[in-house]
Length: 219
Image 1 (cartoon, rainbow, N blue to C red):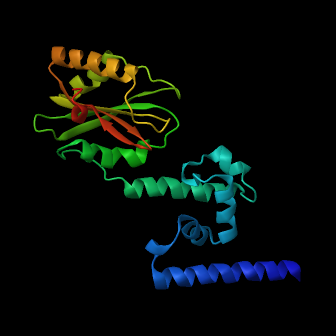
Image 2 (cartoon, rainbow, N blue to C red):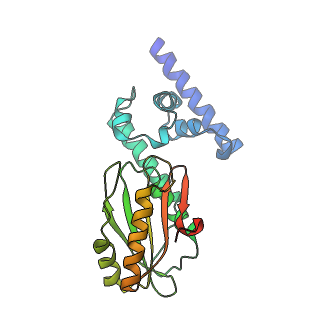
Image 3 (spheres, helix red, strand yellow):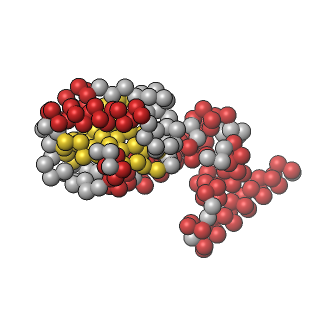
């Protein structure tokens, strides 16, 4: 009887949450209550919160260590996190003009901010700063990414790019440029001048924000 009572209590709690969401609006719900509705289990949502306050950044290994999280529940959370990134990202499409660093940040921060591996990307742009292509140039370790000008500009030259915007993420969460970042940007800028492709901006994306070298006067 006790198991039946516990199950009934959980069902009632979920039903109350669902009704409140419909009457009060999802925008008035906490993250954990929203997650409880999605998982159809408020207690599971609380269990995840106890595992990590930053549950939205949690990875598969951590999820699998969470009590009562089996493979199905882990897959649900991973799918939810990825879907939320795709929904919130404002994609930059081929042929779309890029006007400012905010455009790039809006498109790439949801996608890159919480990556645990460093990535370096290059956007190939035409003379009117319209997107020709996106290139993932490098994927690196947690501490650094090796960037070779040959690999960056060979792709851009093949695209017939006139300009480019370069960006990479900081898994640490801090978007502050390192000495290594500044050195890379200066090196790539010199090569860009030689091959006739202007670097319009160099962006660092992290969970705590985005840094634009152009906005800082470093380009």
